[in-house]
Image (cartoon, one colour):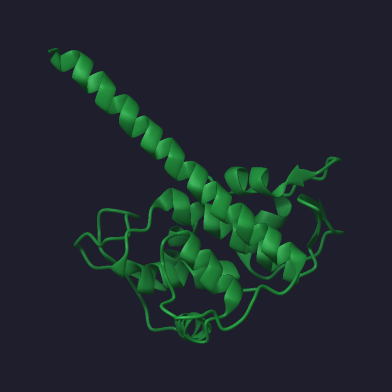
Length: 202
């Protein structure tokens, strides 16, 4: 049940070589939390509907918050709706949690991952080593979620495939949501450029 934290670590570590947006990462973290909840048997998927299981205690605070945020109203929430609702500002929540735990340190200069004014560095912790081992082992779920936010694993061929329809559904939904967010960005960029042209005049 560490996919979400491991994904954040990979974004902060390997992702420093790439441009990872907060919105993209937040959506992927929401997907990673859903993966963790599925593995913890806290939820199941009925097609693309997120069906909560009977309440259980989860040791991880953020994952517990995710479980508490699940909709319990029939016909239950669709995976893509969950990603957008739970994903709002989720990367910032993970940043705060990592800083509070002393696992993320500020260094005073801006890094490429746009999560704040300072450059952020991961502390040398067992959690970081675990995440990097999963990354080096090309674990399919972690690699797929990272790739969705623009962090390629670098392997010429994937070492494995996603295990199960539920995980495939979640990863596909994350990819669709990230592409939708990019489409929104491009549309706003075009609209802003057109507006600026109007003000500049001929």
